[in-house]
Length: 490
Ligand code: GDP
Image (cartoon, rainbow, N blue to C red; front, side, top):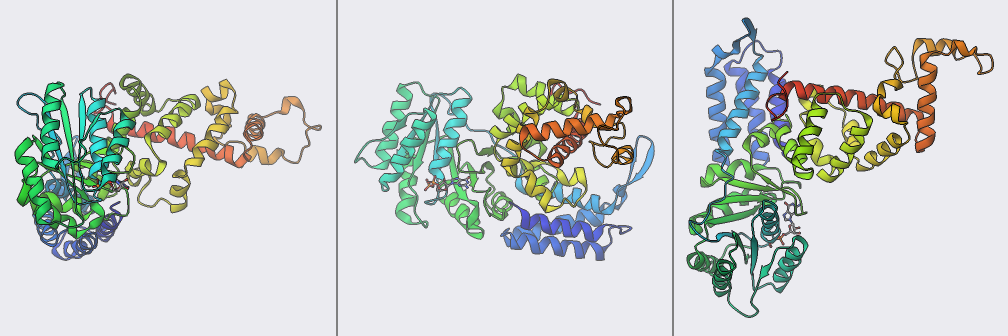
């Protein structure tokens, strides 16, 4: 997601790198890169124009901030960083202000009406929302009001069964009556939320709009959410405009942002309709609904990762207290292979490695260029299974103190000077007193390799990556310490 747009921002940043200051010429060239990528990603034309205009004004108008004072020292902000910061702020301004709250009915049950074209993801999103509300402790019911596609009613019932949320339906009745009856039923049952899954069409037509209008007038839901498939590109904005003009929606939910969507809709919808994006659908399964946070999206668009989103995923799958303890341990950079193993389990329940890696600020940690093969390997979920096998082949002590896999030169049994010096000796010739730390290291590596059915290089690779990762999370702790409850500021 957003690769097209990110590419433009990266090109712009590179263009500015090494330049002394942001002059008219260099800014114009950088903005050209950004412009092309925004248009290619289906951002609405006028939105692109306004965005570039404000970035330009700020980039050229704030020369004075290029020199900032930090702890008494004068520090020059690099032009490329300044440019990225301006883009970041403008992206947030474009997509925000954020408002992911749900309107609550003044009294009784709160209605959420889902509207949108057929196939946009209404039914799936109704299920995702119901699950989210139910997890938050509310009593929820879904209403099958798409009577034209029998499969739609069945699909909603299956979803309801999966998450344990009741589904209201009446065979042969018209959608307006079904929704009205459902509203009475929900009130009588003392439910907190009722979600109406309405019918869609392949394109917008008058009978559909009239039906939705009638349902809305009859049940007066506190929330009307327009569900839009982000994959439809430019059409997303037109669809949003038409639905909103007729139904005065309260918010938009963009779906399928996990796919090949180029993300333009996310940047355009708020600017064009004035209605906030509430949630993002980022996968087919029912836990793949994120609250919309422009900061996270802006950072991802600029290739800076979405560390807050990552933390949210993390807290969703483990109980909060445990999550805090784990996060604290991770971020203090002092966790062991055992902790690593339990993190692997947590990570596995957070989703695929690809999703997780997308949210990590890898660019900031390792500089801009990570070899694609390295990312591919890290995104391979089977890799976690291999890692698990290797850790399980380690002794308790080794898991607790993975440092024992390193000799005093920081090598894990290969390539150290001393080891090379002693290779010519056979085991027999060796005086036991002559055993050096690297011999123990090599023996450990070899034992773990045999135990897990992996190669010694795999084990050495794991130890190396573990050490890097521990350092990396420690660094994140330094960066974000204090922002996370329970984490001491460093
Ligand atoms: P409706 O006709 O608007 O009710 O759409 P559905 O809920 O039936 O969804 C249409 C298709 O889109 C289904 O195959 C869903 O699994 C899929 N879908 C819905 N939301 C998402 C999403 O966020 N990501 C992906 N990849 N697929 C989605």
